[in-house]
Amino acid sequence: MGANVSRTTVRSELRLSSVPRVSVSISPNLTALAVVADALAGRRRGLPDAWRKAIAARVRATGHQAARPIGAPGHSVVPDSVVPLAPPLGDVPMREQLDALRDAPPDRLIRDLEQAFGPAAVPAHWRPAAARPERWLRGYANALADVWSAVEPMWRRARPLLDREIARVGVASMRGAPELLLGSLNRRVVCTGGSLFVADIEPSAYDLGDRPVVLVPMLAGEDSVIVSLDGPDAVWIAYPLPGSAALWRRPAAPAPAPAPAARVAGELSALVGPVRARLLLALDRPMTMSALATRLNLAPGGLTYHCDRLRAARLVARERRGREVWISRTARADELLDLFRR
Image 1 (cartoon, rainbow, N blue to C red):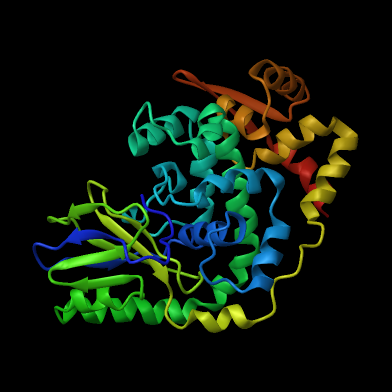
Image 2 (cartoon, rainbow, N blue to C red):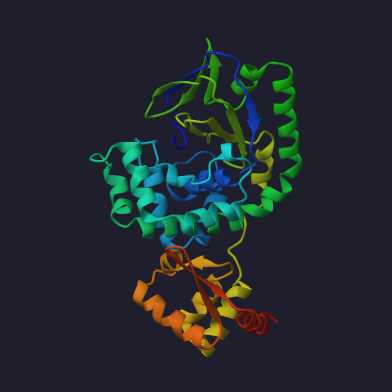
């Protein structure tokens, strides 16, 4: 997958052998990725400085660390794990994308790195992630979540623009002019001579064949374009939503006030201890023991110990499903949390 393209005349090429089939995906995770690249990874693509600073101030240290390889100078290729639920699957809500990252087994990132770069050629900027994949996946999920907390209000305000863009794509497709539509996405994308060209610092060439093209409008800087041209089932192109530049001119989002969840966690910690409080709060849905250990950064033995204590207090339940052990909050635990949330 190609990350945000640079200001260069070097371009990747997508050869169009027939009239492409074009659709739209409303997947806000690409907006979050574009903002992560611009505000955290140093790949500046047009965000106002005030927004860039305000968003960076929201993101946890683990998120800043995970974002670094995405914007490495001279590179645009990133592993598919950066977008675990791709737009060709349909509209992808932000929560589902975050859950997919937090539940992803570490070896998936290793496989995606090997697929992107070759098993013996993982570049230096991705080696820390390859060495500790579970840490990178967790940190990257944190970065997306923190960025989304700042951008989501703007995304809601952009709904009329998104609806207008969906209609524009539909009209162009019905009128049989998808090439004109593709050429109008952004100045970094050019459609001419039977090919689509996308500015890229690591150029490559592909045949579209009979794959569809999925367009993903983003709230992002005016020069932000993210593409995946090599997917077996579809090509997708994420681009700035037309008309959205005015939204960035509003005052930058302030630093967040302490969340009610932080108060709940503090009060719950006094009752059951900090680790078990984090464990209970993390179980907003049933999870496997391995996924929960990764999310909480706990060794399996330590997690089992704390789960046993909470199980004895009738606050969690365990269930074996095949080879996996699932853990969930009990109704008693939910009632306890409700007391602290009042």
